[in-house]
Structure formats: structure tokens, C-alpha cells
Length: 333
Image 1 (spheres, rainbow, N blue to C red):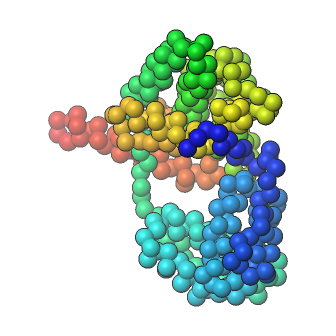
Image 2: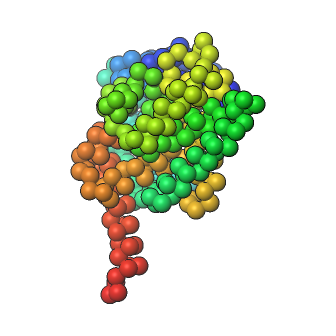
Image 3: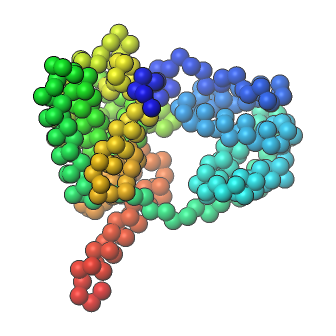
């Protein structure tokens, strides 16, 4: 994908409306309901445009299956989910679509569009105990060393290709920051220059539900950020940049897809891990914090999890790593 497709991912600064025109395949009443539901999600619940699009897409699929949103009942919901299961969708995706359907029917019932809420008797598929892929600490060091080598190579050609030099500085800074803080890729893309408190080494992050939190970062991330802001960002900055911390090659706020590609490419070049994507850095940061003795609730706050149970999966990762180390090292394992 070209970096030219820069768009802002956070809802606060975008000019697009989350309640965009519904698909022409829906009847007029369903289309109007879908637009109203989209506005409710964005303006009343404060969900990001990315999340709103996900809900709308799921509910539109449901409407197309059911022949409209005003005729929804429990049997149609079950038929829809059973059909999706038959297509091979995994449990996590099925649960997300179930959550979308529940959110809509609950809202529609509360607003008087449905006589009853059919989703109250809908069961959620039991989640599989999938452990996220994490990097070894040695992999993280290899990754940052590799990025530094790329910076050194680009620096020699900085006058001939200043854009490549700027991108190398940017990619090193965003990888350092993702691992140092464990923030989500959408949160990173939404950062502004004013989000960084360099002296205190704190980051003001706008998370899910427009909730703000302060996240600390270490000296390596501080050094990488300083180089990017002072030396790399000015080379990409344009009138369209605004206060965005990270920029694409055309000077607009960086797109999350560009961040994912930068991280994927860097991890693939290592050749020593199957971990991929910004979420692997988030998983790794959380696991390494717990490995180092960090309190579970502190990690929950850092990651911006609303529920402690979401954070607890990383305790399973740490326990599994401990078990593997025991089996490999203990003479009577």
C-alpha cells in the first residue's frame, strides 16, 4: 500500500461523519435506522470512527440477512450467526458480531423501534484460550539494532534522499514508542506533538471511549522521539500536518496501515520470530512488564483495559514462558 493514503484514525479531528449513508441494498427504514445508530455510537457513546464502522458493517450484514432491521427476532439472529459459523469465522469474530447485534437491538428497543430486545437470550461463544505471540527480549534488542542500522545507512544518503532518512527516523521512533508504552496502533496514529511530555517522559493517550490516560516511556524511546521530531519530521511536514506527531510521506497524519506495514517489515527482516504487527509489540510490552514483576492492575492501567480479565491473558503468557524455561532447564522437569 502507498503511504499516500494518509487518514486520521481518531474521531476527534476527522471531518467525516460516522453515520455515513447506508448501503443502497437496504430498505429506507433500515438505512435510516443504521444512520441513527451510527450517530448514537459516535456522539453518545464516544466510540472512535473505526469502531463505529465495525458496528455498522456488522449490523448492515445482519439487516441484509434478516430482510430489514425492524423484523429482527431471536431466530433470525441465531440463523445469521449459525451461517457465519458455517463459513468458518473464528470465535473472536463471532463474538464481535454478536456484540454488534446486541448493541443495536438494545438501542433499538430502548428507542421504541423494536417491541422487545431479542438479543437478551443470545449466547456468546466461549472464547478459546489463545495466547498472543510475543517477542523475546533478545528479539526486541535485535529489532532496535536493525532499525538503527537502517538509520545509519539512510543518513549517508540524507542529502540525496531526505525522505528515506526521515522515514527511517520515524519508523525507529514509532517502534520504540509502541514497545515502550504498549499503546494501540490507533492511539499512536492519533498522537499530537502536544501529547508528549519529554521532560517527564510521559505520553497523554486518548484511548477507547475517548478516555485519556498518562503512559510513561523510557530513555531509548525518548532519544528516538527527539531525533524524529527535531530531524525527521520537518522533512515530511507540510501545511496539512497540523499537530500530528507521526506523519506519512505526504505530510499528513500517519495512517494505521502504514504503521502496521513498517512494523511488519521490520519484524519480518529479523527472521527470528513469527510475531507480526504493532499488537505483537503491545503483547510483548505487557508480558515483559509482568515478567519483571509489575503489578497486574498497573499494567491494566498502562494498556487502557477497562476490565482486569482482559489483562490477565498476559499472566497466562508469562506462566507459559516460565513453564517452558523450567522444562528446558530443570534436571527433574
